[in-house]
Amino acid sequence: MPKEWFKRVYVCTKPFMFMVFLQTSYAVKNLVVKSALNKGLNHYIFAVYRNAIAALFFGPLAFFLERKVRPKMTISIFLKIMLLGLLEPVLDQNLFIAGMKFTTATFATAMYNIVPAITFVMAWIFRLEIVKLKSLHSQGKIIGTLVTIGGAMIMTLIRGPAIQFPWTNQHNLHHQTSVNSVSTHDQIKGSLMITSGCFSWAGFVIVQAIALKSYPAELSLTTLVCMIGALEGSILAVVAEGANASIWSIDWDVKLFAAIYSGIICSGSAYYISGVVMQERGPVFVTAFNPLGMVIIAILGSSILAEKLNMGSVLGAVVIVIGLYLVLWGKSKDTNQQDQELSINQQDYDGIKALTLKHNVVESCEKTSSGLEFV
Image 1 (cartoon, rainbow, N blue to C red):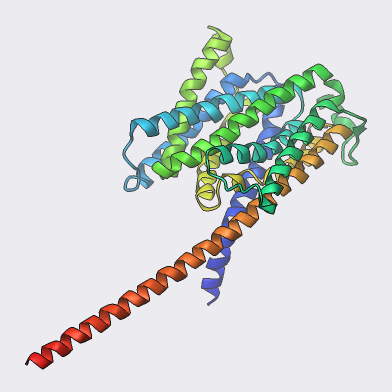
Image 2 (image 1 turned 90 degrees about the vertical axis):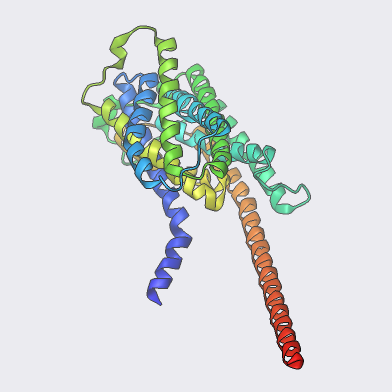
């Protein structure tokens, strides 16, 4: 009995534990990458190394563990993988890191809370999300999306006074990447880059959900996406940086650690885990835990990098979170409704199965009786 109970608890809490792990990993990654950017990390080269490391790490695992379940590659699946490699490994990663270079790790992480709203709109367009305009929970999702967009605009356009945290020490002020030191022009420029990255990430989540239906091998899909992303990112790096060979060299410092950590944990593991959770809970659930990463990075960023938050960013982040959980409230109602429909369908199936069995038994008895009468 205890074994069955623990198994049931694990199955119920597994998606939540996976997403908490991912958000914690993302927060640490943003902190490490921001530190590497301050030391001159080139974001084009970082994206290439990150995805190449992920492909090398997960390739052998995918080859051996998914030999029996890996579907046959088709042109349609390959085109989806090419698109996935462009959306997140190339566009999202470069836009997000470039935007963070103009702002702060905390600001960039907070802005990414608009991803669930964008994902909801895209899922609605591609009919992966249920929307009934007369339904209260569907209205909640729509209003939540609009509120989230409003919060992002507040974060971008309103600054206000800086907020000092009690744990910010004076001795690390030379590492400071304060919002106050960022001009309004740079903040708007960085915000536009991060927002564009949000659209790319949301598009990646939607295409991944579609691709998993025809290619349900998460590790293999992860490896192929990272490999294609590294190739496409290399082309972009050559076009953007030219023939400058020196930018491809990385020393044994925080820049190399950022590439290894991001590649293994935040590219490979994240793609695989999000794919597993997405098949159980859908694409909106996967993007629903972004506020947790914002809280973690706000604490770590202010204590380690001495980043400061301004009142406009905090106000906008609060508005974004309110909108986010309006979307989640509507999503939870959809999940409950789907569970009820599945339960009803199961009951109908069991009833039909019982009637069929009863009919077969009666028919068998009638045949047996006829045989006895004949004898």
